[in-house]
Image 1 (cartoon, rainbow, N blue to C red):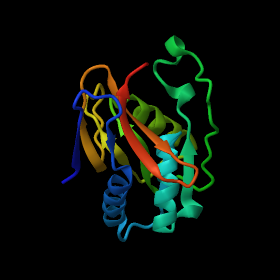
Image 2 (cartoon, helix red, strand yellow; image 1 turned 90 degrees about the vertical axis):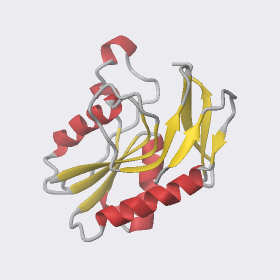
Image 3 (tube, one colour; image 1 turned 180 degrees about the vertical axis):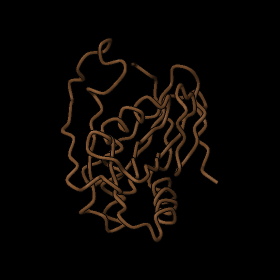
Image 4 (cartoon, one colour; image 1 turned 120 degrees about the vertical axis):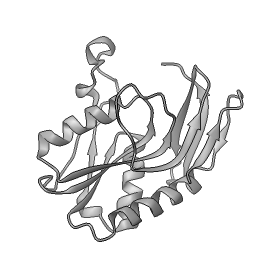
Length: 179
């Protein structure tokens, strides 16, 4: 059963992201057991950090990719180009692969929808599974994660932010949503 992150209405709340990562890793490892042609694709930036760790821990570094969904967002015309666009890099054959798509925080489902569109530009996977460190609910699209480290209950105007230190340690913080 995934951990529950509760917003106690205090900015600066933190959760043990390393423990959540270990839970997520165990779920993904079990879910990929015996799966041929498995690959890991992370959504920039937090999902990419998690994907790097998952690929390393699962021995899938050669089948690791990264996606930036900036140009695929359905709100692109309204928000414009994000100033921190990263390159999409998928250097393996997507056709027939089982891909674990990794996001840091699953919320409305719109980022995941955009990432799936990017994946299909590279080929037709056999299956796409979704892994998220935290699922905060609030879905606007019918998207559900196969693997989740924690569920979050946040008040309106609050968000979860994943950060990574120089040595790769993860931290998940509840903060005011400035978007």
